[in-house]
Image 1 (spheres, rainbow, N blue to C red):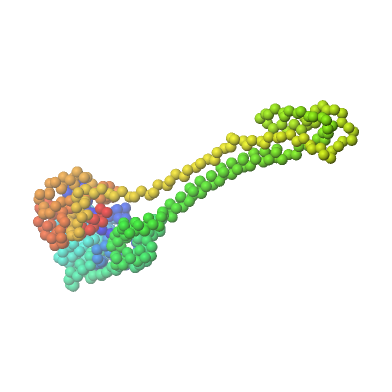
Image 2: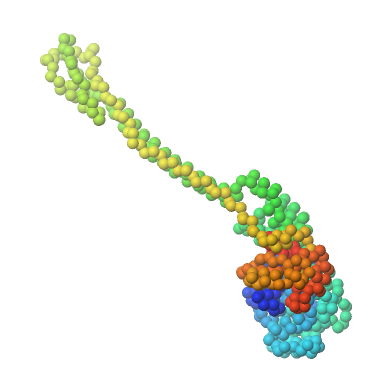
Amino acid sequence: METDFDFGLDSGMNLKADVPKASSVKVTRLLPSQARHLELLSHLASYSELLVVVSGPEGSGKSVIAQGLAAQREDPEETLFLTASIMLGMPSILAAIAGVWDMPNLTDDGSSAREAIRNEALERYKKGNGLLIIIDQAEQLDSETLNDIAHFALLAPQAISIALFGCSGFESVFRSSPAQAPIHTLLLEPLSFEEADLLLTDALGVDGQTPFSDDELTAIYRQSAGWPRALIQAAENHLLSPVRAVQRSSTGFPVRNILGLAAIATVVIMLGMYQLGRDEVEQTSVESLASSASTEKVPEVAAVFPEETQLDIAPPPASGKSDFNYPSEVASLPTDPVPQTPVVANASPVVPTVKPIEKVESVAEPVKTIAKPVAAPKELATPAYTADESALLAAKGGYIVQLLGSYQASGADGFKADWQVKVTGNLYRYKTSHKGRDWFVVVAGVYSSRGEATAAVNLLPPALRKQSPWIRPVSAVQDVLR
């Protein structure tokens, strides 16, 4: 994991050793192979007299292991974490050690300074304290500095342990000499397929679920050759590819969105069925009332009249309610005397006309519940880049030289304006974050090779060269901006 800063340059221009405190070095979840390496390095740093060298290509996870090794130390005064640059030499390392131990200023004589550091280290060792020096990006150190470190590691091997982390090949510059500490070299290897799955799930997954199918994961693993940074970059490119977008749109909403829509639809349907059921119950009750009224048998009246008798009975006045007592009213009408022997054979009973009960019109209308359309997930807004950031993103490779890092945008802009005409190459300012705050970085470039960048550093004004300019691949800056 490449960091975007190796030292703090706030408004001033003072070099600060990167000494991790208890909460400044945050260790991510280590993969199984990284945890094994960390366990071995921790053992060597505590009990061996070896100079530990960790080597691997860019993006192989060296910095993650280095930061994990520093985080395991309980006392911050027992660890010195440095990020190397081409300007870092043995005097700077000795000064950083003295700063950790609050020693008085060292003399300019290198031999006297080493002897003072050695004596202080032995005194601390007698009290049960030791010092672990971790130097990341050690490939930027020249061969003379690396061999000076190997010689220094032999002065007090019990009290001072040193671990160097750098790109493949830097370990070959050490000379085999009895005046130097023996070296233990650890070569990092690519991740296994299972570890690649764990890394992508941890970095890009949601709720512990990997966002890739087995075929996609296999293609990403082959493309990256199993190296962590290349693996994550290939996975991000795959997620942003047009083919992936088409596949996602063809497969529909994610499962959580589908479940949400299904829940809403279920509620709407149940509400509609409930309302429809109420309407049907009310309508059925009204119809059954009308049916019972119309089918109720009217009591037959044995009203027998003489053949000459004519009945002129007017129908009862219409009213809002049906008159179910109309047949009994007919029976009470005055008539002529009736013979004692009734003739019932051919007499048809008089059945009054009963108007059917009108259906009640005030039936509650079903409540129409319209499901609100679920808004499609908003696309992530593309970050707005400045002209300098766009220029850095457009670079097709190469190297840049980091000159300044500041928490203040005005300080970075002023630095860029002051030094633009005094350095070789263009100055660019980009924005990132450091310890939860905005961090503004000024870099020079873009240079086609590391040699060209080194030559540009040598041409910098002395005031800038003293600040240990940092040569970095432009791809590291592009990763931060994206």
